[in-house]
Image (cartoon, rainbow, N blue to C red; front, side, top):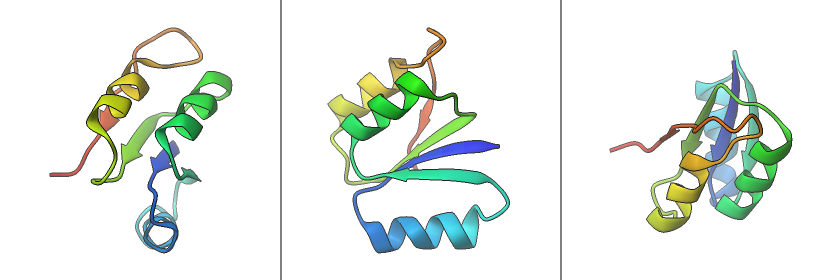
Length: 77
């Protein structure tokens, strides 16, 4: 599974990618802007976002996708 992890804390992002998602192909980006650029050029099976990201920006990510389909951004509770 290809996962886009949007997380602005680099150490935490790397821990999640290597410890929790090691069996998947994970791309880590630090901002929603970088995530929007990534989904504009590549296809992902899931997008995971950090808790401290701006909710309005995340709404943009949820609607973005290279294939024109809406993508669901998953935010932990």
